[in-house]
Amino acid sequence: MRFTEIDLFGVYVAPISVMMIGAWLIFLPLRQVAVRLGVLRRVWHPVLFEFAAYMTVLSVIVLFISY
Image (cartoon, rainbow, N blue to C red):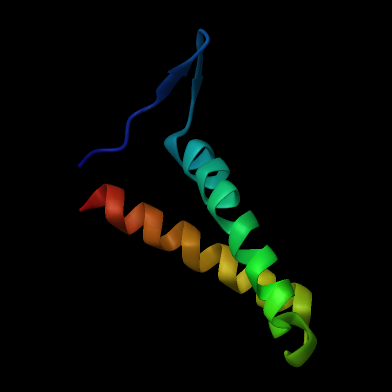
């Protein structure tokens, strides 16, 4: 699939920006689950762990759309 610009209320935006927002919306509930299970208390650097988890979700979205 070829990534093309998306018309959002008359403004063309890059498709990665829409994917980043989608990944953030998927990541938020996953973060809440990690907080409730205590995962963030057991990792060495919680912010780095969250960033890596967000990038993983974003990568899965990009790979899924490009497939």
